[in-house]
Amino acid sequence: MINLDYPVHLEAAEEGGFIVTFPDVPEAITQGEDEDEALMRAVDALETAFSFYIDDRRPLPVPSEAAGRPVVRPSTLESAKLALYAEMTAQGVRKAELARRLGWHLPQVDRLFNLKHASRLDQIEAAARALGRRVNVTLSV
Image 1: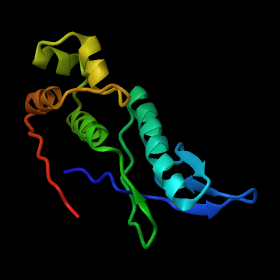
Image 2: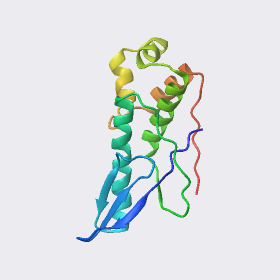
Image 3: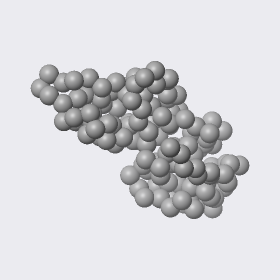
């Protein structure tokens, strides 16, 4: 199970509003008129930064302890894709190998890891099985 709860640093901007940065993901930065808007936009900033990690084939950064700071996580579908990407990276499996295991064309695997593409959950489940894993869904408070 991968932890995708990333602490953020909220800083009041001189011109008003708040700037959001991520100690563990320096590529992600955004702002909002108030704290709620800034945190909402932080999800998109985090997902955009992770797209760069996937494009560059870099491992995802490990989140540090929140230590009382607000925490932001990617949306549910993107979290499933990121967990799959992290497992693929940990196993040293490349996209071409995953495509071969699934019997898919490489563009299908590329779309699976595109965080802006609305992949289907059954595709993520199939890819997880190809890596010897399964997808679990839980609801929590």
